[in-house]
Amino acid sequence: MNEPQQTKPDYERELRRAGIRITRPRRVILDILSEADSHPDAMEIFQRASVIDKSISLSTVYRTMKLLEGMGAIHRHAFEGGPARFEQASGEHHDHLIDLDTGDVIEFHSNRIEELQDEIARELGYEIVHHRLELYGRRKGGRKKK
Amino acid sequence: MNEPQQTKPDYERELRRAGIRITRPRRVILDILSEADSHPDAMEIFQRASVIDKSISLSTVYRTMKLLEGMGAIHRHAFEGGPARFEQASGEHHDHLIDLDTGDVIEFHSNRIEELQDEIARELGYEIVHHRLELYGRRKGGRKKK
DNA sequence: ATGCAACTGCAAATCGTTTGCAAAAGAGCG
DNA sequence: CGCTCTTTTGCAAACGATTTGCAGTTGCAT
Image 1 (cartoon, rainbow over the protein chains, first blue to last red):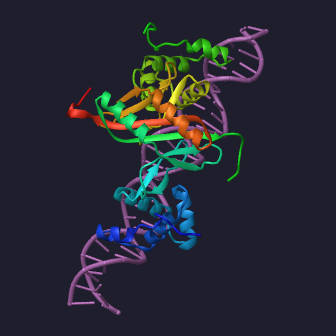
Image 2 (tube, rainbow over the protein chains, first blue to last red; image 1 turned 180 degrees about the vertical axis):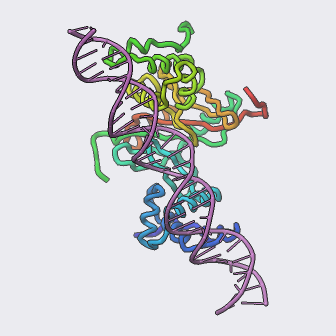
Image 3 (cartoon, chains in turn orange, brown, blue, red; image 1 turned 120 degrees about the vertical axis):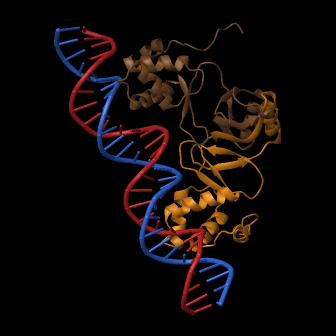
């Protein structure tokens, strides 16, 4: 029942290819990221990493996140009022719906919206480099724990 | 368009009505906000305020922004990698296109996109409280400078 | 004018993140 | 293996944006 789908791209290979060293902290962080189902922030990654290797520092988590982001291996999201949260870049583009009560993040995608965005930008004489679309809401019909 | 502009709503009246004191710093900040055509950040507001009254402090700018935000008089935007920027809440809802080269902010609105957002949220069992849609792009054709 | 809560400036605190530095550890080579 | 030559690390300190505690000031209802 725990069959990972797109969960474990071979980052080590990719890193190597980019002339970047595979160190113990990086291996640990990479593992955590590929197993993460949510969108953890640096502190969460740090804590999970600490369980595996107590000597890993928060700075290294941040440095690694920046490295991976630069490689395009992960995406960094700055949702409202909170630390940055990360997610694997595997899979295709999507936007986010944030549950205001639980902080849960739900991914969605709308081709139609993206088309409209392009159209709007074009009309204004712009070319979109990237965008950010976040919906903040609450569950309809009363609360529910997850 | 019969309505002039949205430049100078009578905040003083509103503030009074909410039992909030009209102080010199607040008057100055309010004036700056109503004359701002762009989306200034706290430091910019602070600097413009300093010209008028050298004794105004940055803390007061922040405190006033929070107060006004709480009253719904202004909106706070946290665009990518930068301090929060503020804008008067007068006028109707819109989203933003940020010029990556100049930092300029262009406002736009699309009913169609909002409808689609609602639809998506509804399908996921959510009710949107608010959203954030930001397009980051550059001028097409290479034209620079505004 | 008087009084008192609301407000202010200032400095210090906070939060998330980055950075300088000396020590430690990858990886190619012999 | 052991030797280099780098890259990477942990730590602590620095950072930028924003907030807060405090003691003194001010608005404004009386």
